[in-house]
Each structure stands twice: as structure tokens, then as C-alpha cells.
Image (cartoon, rainbow, N blue to C red; front, top):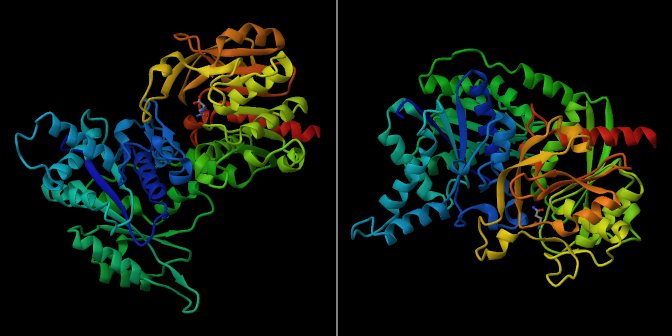
Length: 538
Ligand code: GLN
């Protein structure tokens, strides 16, 4: 356990500087040198996990194989590193307190007063090491959410301070990410906010080893020297992080700045090999030189906030690269869709994706978008609630069940073609109680789904309470909508499709959670291909 090295990434000056991307990029470089690396995120809010947060509050909720509802940064970690993260990779203040309070109720503190220091900080330090237990990693990166100076993240920083003091000097490292704002009037990048933020970090007892400075313009040597002098770091530990065209550029930008070399030197680790970034460079090359372009309209209800559908957007980037095609996404608010404005709002797309979601807001708009795609033979892909909408639409307009509905929308519906799963009916608590994480699915040979995956046994991640109601399966099959993927243990329908259509697929699971830069998800790849074919036939 002691051989594991710990890198902490903190942020200062402003939020949204892209700590997750910088952490994932560094991890990518270290992984490409042959080190076994993982990343975890510590979030300073009191929710036990982000599963109960509205996407408008915190963006998408990312679900891991083991069913953890986590921060969207874990999606970046998986997409960059091609690793599977777990419950252990995302810890919130809420979870830390919950663990400590549960122990207190069990009498574990033997009459002691339970306090932030040492009990909360001890629990945080224990959680820093959760991933170190099975000798799976050489390096563990820990991203500390929030910005230095926030009341909320203080216990995390105090735990980092103690942890560094307890560990051998070269076993831990702190990277602080800051912003160098450009003042137009002065015509220069300003270092003062960075100085202040490092000062605040030092007041918490933490001297950062490396500064990564976000900037819109190149950071010259003069400026680097100034920052180094005032912030107590080596000049070659002042790393520029210039705005990038794509997040996937950042690993190469960090390599150019030698961030990985600085890290290895400070941790006294061997430089091993040069990072092997061949496939990453090929990916980037294709990303920058698409030969075609398609327009895909995404119909959803959180479209005002792009982070709410982060994994879907990134899956389209991956699938576009695979097809050497630029995918232009148009985000359409389903709540505003009507029969009258539908065509104009969708904007003659080459493909339509109906997004996941919860509750009734915007549902009618999603249903008419499905109908439009089905009738006009536009490639259609429905994810989770999007698949459920496809089932409702087909029920109402093709199977002949005029009042087909989901019991999520109308609990009294006489024809709940989408109904609550049996196991969910006994659930009373909200957080972490949906059908979550990876489940197996068996695909029928000869179907579109089988052609897409090229195999019959797959595993995909889930996050839902409602499902296709198997009482209606016969009627749907006879009317032309088949269940091409089924969970072998529970018989739940996982994939539906229709035949006489260029591409019409609905999935109960979330394929977007498994698409990575170097391993694009086959459904997204084939959906983009179908959209490309459609655009040629127009
Ligand atoms: N609200 C639906 C359900 O719970 C769909 C969930 C989703 O789209 N993630 O089944």
C-alpha cells in the first residue's frame, strides 16, 4: 500500500476551470507511460451522492458499472483512460458525514466528542486510500471539488495537509489549477488572483508543488518566473493550460508543457517509457479532419445546460470520429414542441435522438418527435425515457392502444405499456434506489441490435424505475415492434426496434456511459452511419 503515490488536484480563483479534464489528461499521460493510474473525485456538498440532484444543478449524473450515481467528471476519467470507475471513485462530504455519524450511532467512538478534526478528517484520509487496497494502482489522482477558500472544501484541504505530513515526502504531490485572467485594458495576463489563491492554500498548510495556469493566451517566461517567485514553486513547475479547441487536445498540450515529467520527477518515479499516444493522436487527427457532416437533433428537457447530457454529446464526438464525420448536434427543448412547430423546430435533421429523463414535463414533445422520425423514416435512437416514449408512441399510433401511457406519467392509466418494475414498487427511499449499474442483456440473432453489436451477450448500465410492460409484448411483436434485447434473469425488455425503417432503435439502458474516445459505442457509431446515409439520400 505504501508504494502508491498520491496526486491531489485543487482549484483556485474560479470554478469551471476544467480540473477534471486536467486531472484526466495527466492521468492519461502517466497511463500512456505504462503506469497503473486511477482518478477519484471528492465533492464538497452534503448530498450522499449526486443521484438526487436535478441536472440543472449539477449536470449529468454519471452511473458506474457497480451502480454508483456519480459526478460527471467520472465520465471524463473513463472516456480518457478507458478504465471502469466505481463507487470508490466519487466521495462527497455527505457520504463522509454519513459514515462518521453511522459509526457514532454504533458507539464506535467510545464516548468521545465527535468532531470535524480528527473524526471527519480521519474518515476523509481513509477514503483517499480506498482505491489503494488491492495493489491495482501505482498512482491515485484525487480531484478536490470546489475552489480553495470555500467553506465547504476546507475539511478536505485539512485532510490533504495531514495526509501529506503523515506520508513520506515523495509519495504525495499537490497540483493547483488557477486562472490567469486577461485584462483587455491593460493588454496583459494578470497573476494576482493566482498569488492570492496560492496564499490561501498555504494558509491551509498546503504548499502546491505544481501550478497549472488556465489562460486564453500563451504564458511567457517572464510571467512564469513571476508566478514562481511569488508562489514558491520552481519555474518549470508553472504549467500553461491554454484554452483548447477540444478537451481531447489537453493531454497533448500537457505533454508539451512536460506536466507528466514534472510530476514523475517530484514523486521520484522512473520516467519509464515516453508516453505511447499513437492511437490518441490518430483519434485527434480524425477529429480535426472530418470528411463529412451530419445534423442530429437531440430532443430533451434539460437542453439549456449542455452538461446535463455530457456523455451523449461526447459519445457523438467518438462516433463521429469513427465515421470520419462531424456530428452537428441541435438541442431542442421538448416542452416547446407541438404538431405545428415540430418540423421547423427539429430543423430537417439527418437523425433524431430522444434523450433520457424523468417526469412528465416535455413528454408529449418527445412522443411527437418519435412519431415524426418513425413516419418520415429518419434514423431514430431513443435512450431510456426516449425508448419508453417510442413504445408509447408505437402503442398509440400503430398497435392501436389509443390511451397507451407510462405509469410514471399517469399512475391510473388503464394501459400502462410502460410500468413500474415490480422490485421498485416496494421502494420508499429516493437516493440510490433505482435499477442502477451494469446488467446483462441477451440479443436475438438476426435483429438490428445483433448486427450493431455483432454478438448476443452484452452488458450495459442502467438508471431507471420503469420498464416495458411484458403483458403487451405479444401485441407489439405482432404489430412490428420487437424486443431484440432481453435481460436473461428478469425478462425485462432492454432493446426495442422496428423493421421497415432505416434505423429505429430504443434502449432501456444508457450506452452513452460506456463510449470512450478510443472505444466508441457501437450503437452511436451505427446511428451516425445511418444519419450519414440518410443525408446522402435526401
Ligand atoms: N423516468 C424513466 C424511468 O425511471 C426513465 C429514466 C431515464 O431516462 N433515465 O424509468
